[in-house]
Amino acid sequence: MTIDTAVILAAGEGTRLRPLTTHRPKPMLPAGNIPILEHVLNSLVEAGISEIHLVVGYQRVRVQNHFGSTYRNRPITYHIQHTQLGSGHALLQANETIETDFLVLNGDQIVTEEMIETVSSSHTATDTATLGVVESEKASQYGAVELNDNRITEFIEQPADDEYRLLNAGVYVFGPSIFAALERTFQEQGRLSLPETIRDLTTDESAVRGVVTESPWQDATYP
Image (cartoon, rainbow, N blue to C red):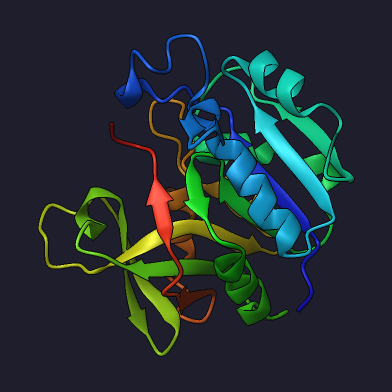
């Protein structure tokens, strides 16, 4: 399936990276000599994405002033998450403008063009969601997954033990039905979590595809 639309979640503050994020959002922290978010956009452009949506919130003016209305001749549509109420709530801000299957990436994780292309090309019309998966000893620090014949059968946020070796790389393809699934998801203390929605979807053993990739992956959650 050809995917040409991407939503990047770049609204969070990154409290675990204070004081680095006191005056700028985590996706705008430098990696090399450019912001992390710019690396993400470059990978999307190289992968052939033609329509970019950015969900912004905390210190959003820093993001909007840096990138403007286009990036490398691709139009950028901004969606504002006025209150940071979780990744699922952030994605819902783009609900009214997305009508086809689309990519979702975190704005604070450096991923490659190859990973994006692998996840996109693996997604089919019958998949509710497709997730990029990376093998790592750090799986317990993030979202760990279990795979059975390319289907996600278990999705665990920060598991209590180190037995897991596959982590959610934060590269997704969703069909438009993800928005209805988000609205059905239980909100804990008013926060709506995208991983919680994915966990709900795994109760249908055919709904969520997992794609293991050996492409480089780097997260900016911890200093």
